[in-house]
Image 1 (cartoon, rainbow, N blue to C red):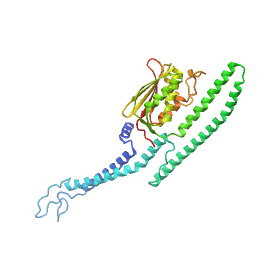
Image 2 (image 1 turned 180 degrees about the vertical axis):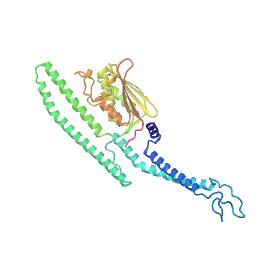
Image 3 (image 1 turned 45 degrees about the vertical axis):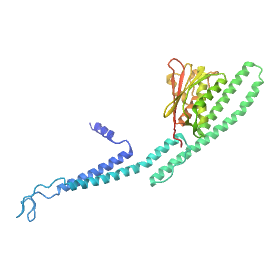
Length: 357
């Protein structure tokens, strides 16, 4: 029973620090006033007391028996109301003031998820607030330093790998066996594609481009035309008003989705739908789709469905991951689902006005 009461009491507490501070101050103010009123009524004069007589001995000469004093005088009620109002206003301001630094840190943490290179927070406010802000800025600086070191390391390794790849390509051309020559060429192309995709993945995360007003309809039409010029069966339908977006990043995102659709499904159908607050881009194919338990896993870097690990359509495993990260930087959503009959449907939802920092 005690546990049930305790659990119910915890549920009644406000979920925010501001609400709990305000509730605590309200209870303290209310309890102090109840205690003051209790003491006042306990110490009030008795009805039978009067001048010249002790308490309880009846009225003195020339005095009529007084009636019982009112327990809640209008003036007393006004006094209590004014004090309670003033104290509750102070409690509300104080609670809001104390919770403001925490809200600012939470907002900065969300912004770091979108842009790790955002300007550091200003170290102002109370001593505790300045200390927390200083630690937060130090954490952001350390993350930026680690990311820069990672990018430099991977870029150096990728650059060094291209030299032996070039030598391998030259030596492969001297092979007399046509089958071995073709196998060597295929391996070199796959290794080069993996290096390029890795660099693009890191470059997009480390150096995001600015947001501009983008004609997404023209972008998709141009992308479909380029794919058709390469002999791919790609179509595009729909229209949408311009949105705020990163032009090169968004093109790379949709291009990856279209290439996956063509590689695994043979065709790619792009549809664009306009909404008041967002736009919706769908890329569909006629392939075999992805098992339901793999739909979330394929968004991880270098993850590939086991059935796709072959020379002809294996890929690198970064296309969907790059597209997912780009959509996330636009504060949108990328969802995968299998079509009703066949194929995979990739839905990209982009807000019209992302919070640009």
